[in-house]
Image 1 (tube, chains in turn brown, blue, yellow, orange):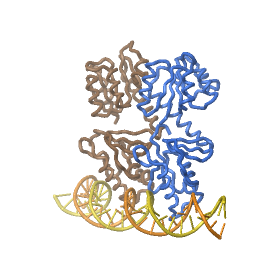
Image 2: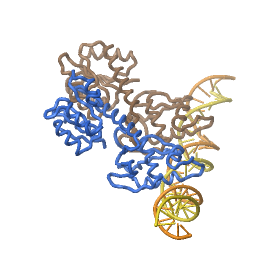
Image 3: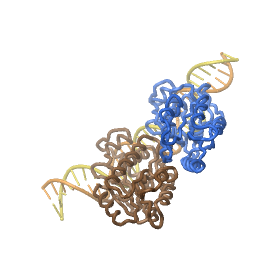
Image 4: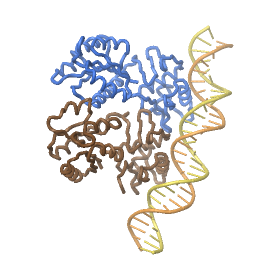
Length: 232
Length: 232
DNA sequence: AATTACCTGTTAAATAATGGAAAAATGAGA
DNA sequence: TCTCATTTTTCCATTATTTAACAGGTAATT
């Protein structure tokens, strides 16, 4: 499920967008202003952020700057006519796209899809790009793993296994797949090795804030790496 | 550390780029114009050059021509809208890529990475080109090796082994492959010779800054040369 | 609800691969 | 042939992985 953070102080527009995107299968969180958006960023780790430029408390420009200080998450700005587009998309702000109000929600959907597609292509194209998800950071350049900023020691198998799972977060990976990719052999009848590695990984990478393990079991099928709050 | 030379007369833009790329782990040097860029080229030997087209003293086009007279360093041009792209990228100028102002810093980063990746692949094909990665420099012309600028003595086997690994950094090389390429024979059952060479190499080429060895083990498979740098 | 047949999680023991010291073998040049 | 650097082999400690064994759980079936 793609998580979308919308920051806009217009109740009517927000409801409209929320309804439309929920219907399209997105998980929409709403903030009334920039300050609230920053708080929700930290808590929710959204996949994409939509920022209205005109907001109370902290406007879109300032919010974007602060987001960029700690995250490379894709951002789309909602602008009024006459805003300086070059400045928004350019070096100074670093937004990924913009949309002038008023707009059609389908237009917004199209741009979100385009951006997410581009982002995932970029990551595939670069085998050394880091992967971070809900506090787990994989530095693939030197095969090290950080949990909330702290280096943790993983064995080769554990690292490879974790890498497999982080490349397809929120997706079920069958035990067959995992065994072949991470351990390099077909899964045979009474092979419990994979289960052991998962067990050890769980101990090392800990749990989500709620206490659920980051690696969830799908009985009879395999495992999923869950990023924050993808409930039962 | 990747060295980047930026030539642009716009102070604000330069500061932004400098800040962004320093944060991404690049070593940025700045020139205010083409003439200064040429001087810094000679002094600094950058890995990649970013040239603004519009500059006082010596514009981007002319600077690029003079750079090409003596160096094949990758160059990205920053153009204004409406510049003749074909002419910039074509034979006449010989730039490696371009970006129209205003641009998103992440876009520039993506292009730099792509170009560096391409450049390092080309280098592998050239048996006389030196290879440098995270402080390890292989001078293939005379088969000498420098660690952070200091000459270190390697035996023939150690050198060949290191060369194999540096040609495919960040990639697992199986013990079979390495034995055949570096020692010239198939790996047999209780042959520990390769492991010994790796062990000795590790002693000689030291560790990454963090303390992890530069050569990592992938148990049951082989070894991998890791670098903590961008873009290799 | 009880039975049954699977799965999974985990502990502990067994096995296999690696790291490295040191001894033995090799081989190129004097 | 002798020397000396290099390479290979031997051997044991260490660490990673796999296997065995068992304790629960789940879900379908009776």
